[in-house]
Length: 358
Image (cartoon, rainbow, N blue to C red; front, side):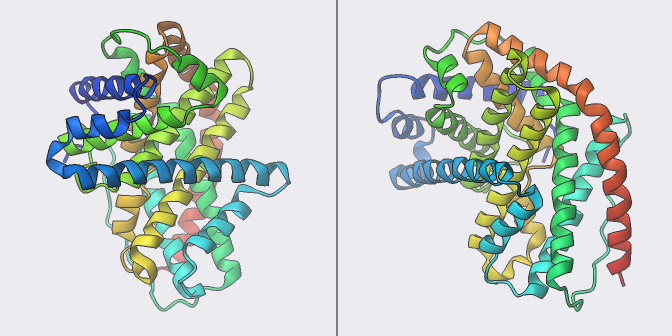
């Protein structure tokens, strides 16, 4: 399966996003159910209703966690402290040893995504190396698990920054064909934060895209919750770029907000993976990360920012252009921050992984 979003897929996906966002901003209260029935008749009405329900529930959870993280940061907590609380809750069935092992493997997976992103940004070709297995007998302590969460938070920061520097989704959206017409009311929705219907639309568009083969790495088996979190993050990223372009936030604030979005995506991914796998998540962490926590993979970031930029274009050519220009500008702000963050993560991560290999 392809690992990059190509222009043809982008054009197909943009058309689906346009269709669903137009429906979301229209007068039909049943727009989501009706449009899913039209596009995915083979899934049956029961499955369509389930897709709709999962999308709505996941958006509520995503938005709730965004608010929770922002409140925690305002109260003086760190992202790592917030994430620790969320992961402890999501993976409550695990013993401390199982929790530590799961975190260790999750760090490995995200570190691999970050290596791929950095190599690509630097113009090289990433060659995946099979990770050696860490000992399953190591008796992880609470403090060591806490250290792994701090490392995970740093890996998320690098992945988020790398996505900003790469900027592929925004760039591809700028190259894709023009939108047929502006969607009335959309500009106000993304500016004032009243965007649940927009997120529903983009989430459903990704579900349809996955079902029809428009997306790289994501197929019919991809959990709807994962696609919803990608879509919700993409809409939030576009809003951040618009705030940055409007001068409402600084470059540093924009980067921090982008990192918050990625942190919530990872948190939601673990929540859904924990619900799916329970105590088996440690043994199935590779599968869990691929299906439920793929948010730092470069192609996932591209898909998310691409659909977010497509929403901006639908809000009007000026807004769409503004978002894409802001994404170009923020790259230069992010580059030195990424280099510093990566140097730290690379060194600490390498020592961490080497220490626990047998």
